[in-house]
Image 1 (tube, rainbow, N blue to C red):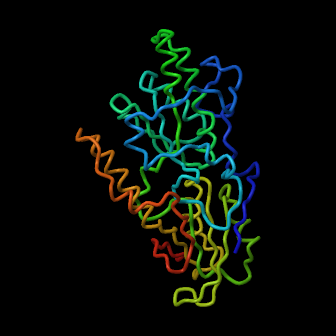
Image 2: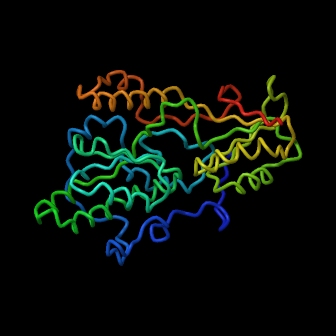
Image 3: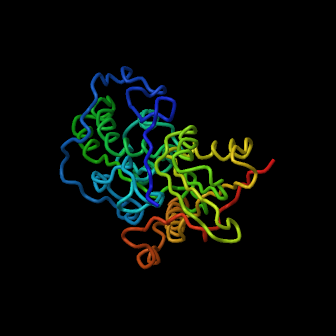
Length: 320
């Protein structure tokens, strides 16, 4: 039941490219050359905000040997210290123009959200991408582009510019949507006809967009007695959403086939809820929300939940 990774063809979701971003003009900021993927930086110190967020952020450096382009036998949809995330936390950007920070983020891909309301008070901006690959790309290179903005900011003197550049950090973050019950990018297909093998299923899924992994399970229960079940995880949540809508309308494999969104693991949802509780306390100006429960309930590495017949996600039955 190993997972399969499918390379994107030109007709599918493209691999994110900064220079090809339609919403950003590289020359408008005099970025005539791409900066290196990694740049030397001084010793970094944890800020008060980072300490408050310590249970919800992690470094992208831990993922250098576990790129999202590598295949896994299960779906990498949970947020943990060893997995890429669609969400990022940008620290140290309070002295940069928010419009430029946003346009720079957009250059890496379509944004799921851009939350800057705590930039002035907590010096952090929360960003998330529709496409996981966009976030992986930004986690490695966004900091360097933001440092260039700081260097060219005429409102900062030399010392302020250096201080701003040194303070900039881009870390993976728990998504602001992590408390929701269902994953947006992972789907399960039940009652797939026996004539459809894994290759045919994968071919159909990749027609909607780039696929991160495909998994086949043979289930025996009252919902899918002896039938074939396929799971698929898309890189882009928009591709998964369109897949459900179109498959429901066209029913290419018959009306017995049903689609279910993968249910999030309970500990992942709890982590997302605690993250929102902390942010809510900031919004009310009441300081840090106690997170003692997180210390006990959230392991260092949250295991990715396997697609199984016991999950109970929302169902979209393929019927007229």
